[in-house]
Length: 170
Image (tube, rainbow, N blue to C red; front, side, top):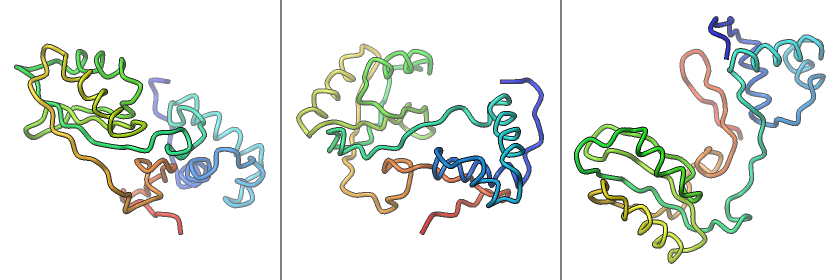
């Protein structure tokens, strides 16, 4: 990522939003939507990649299609002050943990876990709990997604506007 920040204008936001909705959209298609030539869109996408605004392109897949039918959030409580670097080492060892972050409040970290079924989730939870600095965990199973187009449900993200508002598709 370049140290200098390039301007990020409304056209860039529209381009990023189009790519987030469908990364396979051609530069020509995006250009016709935002009022630029395909070449101008490509130049902007290249700049956005060079400056680290766009970090990659990916496919969005329904977790259930991959066999991940159980989903939970796990609050992790540590003995003393476990450094985030140590927590990161632990979560990297568990492919079932799809997101992990340190948080405010009583818990030290929050983990997003996907598993094949409840038994698999229980096994993952036990592997997490054997870490010597983890004092306790509290789990919450996901029953359904109220916002099925959200990233947590396996959907693509939408870029917020300048006011921080996110417009959901549909």
